[in-house]
Length: 265
Image (cartoon, rainbow, N blue to C red; front, top):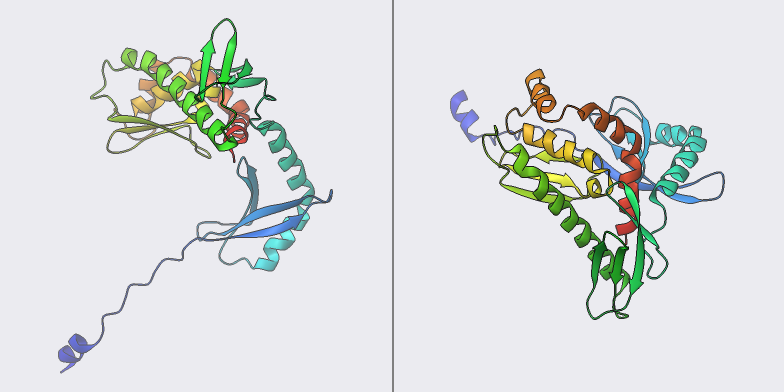
């Protein structure tokens, strides 16, 4: 009888793990600026944390923390928040403005930029005269930003095309494909299917730093982790990798913010 009752009872659905909850709250800084803060209730969070990156301000709350405690924490750190947001604005610089922007970041340098009309959107690089941005009068801001993104990706692919053949020896295979995208924290990643993803902001960095990220991800074809064996492979192929890591620690946030400022709509 008991067995029959158990069969007739509806099966219990497995309990779901708490999910991450996100919303946005408005906040006024001491200087009168109105900012939006992303509030994230995260089951993995152990303490209330306020952070700022190129995407803006983020307030992380553990599940046990109340919304009131989060807002109190935000008010207690409003001076720090204002300073960090101001610094991010300086990193981002001015957006892409037709006829106004007179230089663009590329390969660790600010390259002079000239504007001209034309029938089609295009950006040309001349080693002697810098960059030429040809833009029809009918091209809108979104079209200009799309042309700049395409230009940066083409430059990144050209760099990878020069470096990649020299590092394939000793690897089990080449990456199945290479994609460029904008990321918030990572500089590169290697998926199980062999797809190599690279942050588009690498094109703004000095070439040696970009090359190091490429080598780093290629070494994951040999070792998926960051074990001693992995770092020995990196060391053998790129002995100055520590210098490039220091470079990213010092300049990484600025590079990502600069790209975001140029491409943000």
